[in-house]
Amino acid sequence: MTQTITPRVRTLVLLLLAACGLLLTTAGPASAHAALTGSDPQQGVVVDKAPDQVSLTFSEKVALSDDSLRVLDPKGKAVQQGKPSEVSGTTYAVKLHSGLPDGTYTVTYQVVSADSHPVAGAFTFSIGAPSTTSVSVSGETAGGGVVGWLYGFGRYMSYAGFIVLVGGAAFVLGCWQRGAGVRPMQRLVVGGWLTLTAATLLLLLLRGSYTSSGKVGDIFDLDLLGNVLQTKAGAALVSRLLLLAAAALFISVLFGAYDKREDEEKRDLTFGLAIGGTVVAAGLAASWAMAEHASVGLQAGIAMPVDVVHLLAVATWLGGLTALLVALYRSEAPIESAAVRRFSQVAFGSVVALVATGVYQSWRQLGSWSAFTETRYGQLLLVKIGLVALLVGIAFISRRWTAQLADTVVRQNKRAPQKERVAASASGSGKSKGAGSKSAGDSKRAAQLARQQAAMDTARQKRTRDGDPNRFGLRRSVLAEAGVAVVLLAVTTVLTQTEPGRTEQDAKAAKAAASSSSSSSSSTAGSGAVTLDMSFDTGGTDGKGVVTVDFDPARVGGNEMHVYVQRTNGRAFDIPEVKVALTLEAKKIGPLAVTPDRIATGHWSASNVQIPMAGDWKVAVTVRTSDIDQTTVSKNAQIG
Image (cartoon, rainbow, N blue to C red; front, top):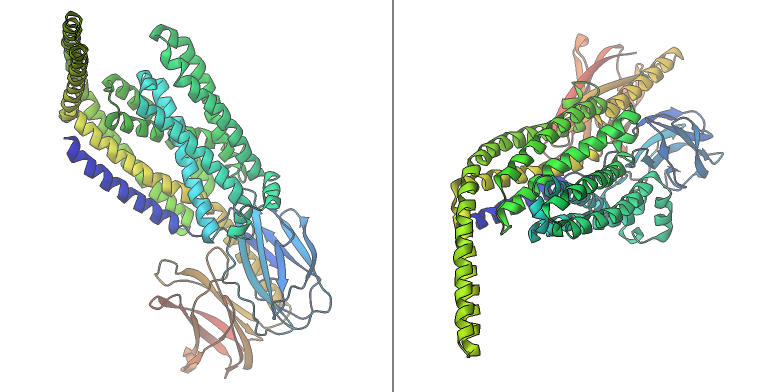
């Protein structure tokens, strides 16, 4: 029976690793909690004279470095002077050199949001009139490249190590105390500790490069490491390392002095270990809560302890599940059905806590039902909810196998004393025979026979245990649970690096309000400029965005036309082609095709666009995001 299980286990492990690798490699650069909600000058605007400074407004406070905000002229030369500074609240500015010539200028920014995630982007504005620019901003992303991938992998391994460490120790202490003397269980918990420690050290080294240059060579830059230690994220990682030292002491007692105590002596030590272990586990969970999404935004004082409970519930459930899987597959000592039933009760309580805290977190991070489908965070959350529901369904099947396993364990326990007596008799017979003989060879032969008999008894007992259909069924259901749990952990890791839906929608609303205000101001001033905003979706994997078309002065005759293409998060969208067609349906004029020239990433322009007569013109924009994915959106505007 064991030989038929091993290939299945190997195949499932390979499939799970491939699925997790796919999730981690397709996660892309980390989306941050902070989002750019406004700027002065605004994106794409043409100003009459050079501004004294460029200011950016974010959805929350951010951390700046000396080169967080840069302004580049059309030739790519930096024209800012001094360091960026906080103006007020969430607005930050950098001074510009005086006497800047006309042309298109590029603003790039790379900051760290209050929840520790880096955010970067770029946009353009023009002085006097737009011009060509040599600046490419297609690479202005945060948390990408090799360093970004390593950081994401480190986050995944840190979560995995935490879950195995806390859940495995809780399983031994609360469900199967005999497991403290089982070697595979000891290796599992110690492996979780080593994984979490190594991942934390890796994250600490990567942090400086991850939030700044993204270069592999900067990983061991001591200056960057010193700067990281002064940040909230760095303090959280250092605190985690200190708590892991306390966790090492807990593990040494659990698998050392605790295992050697008699059952009656274990009671007081169990209570002490439970209290100490809970404090250490809560501290480790708090090292995430104090530096990530829960630490900023709405109701942070409530969200952080809720996040701690959420992480502890996940670790108790999934880590205990991993320990149960190891006990069923790797342990020589059979696990009692009572221990499995106790874990089933603990897992049920963990699921209840998980659902309760998850509902609160979902409300806090999304804010509306529409965010489930309109934001990436909401879509990932739906996937996570589906995986949790699947996991609960498989766990329900496991409970049935647990109930049926009880009778089998009772029968095995009844047969065990008889086997022990037979083994003892054989051993005693060997000793007696050896004592009566003066030959040393006979004594060695008796000892060898006794060892062979013990090995045969152990193998027979293992075959009997593995051949039990109830235990085999429990093994399969627990293995399926563990498989879903691995994928669930990968989705959760990506989710923690994704901009919350509430922030994304608030940023969109703020930018729309700013754009509307700007458009109204322009109309009031009599400039005659027309701005059209149109959402599009080409249907591809990355095909959603907003296209903005500006006509200036929006009158009969020649006009300047600018087209801006942005992602849904407000960043410039690097797409291969944009086309515009103008139609005056009332007079049956058009479509008049206009092919604008690319100025910069997400920015196209066309000069002297001729409007033959005044009227309600239909402006159709064709956006192509790949070789096969394109769409056409349209909107009417009064021109002339």
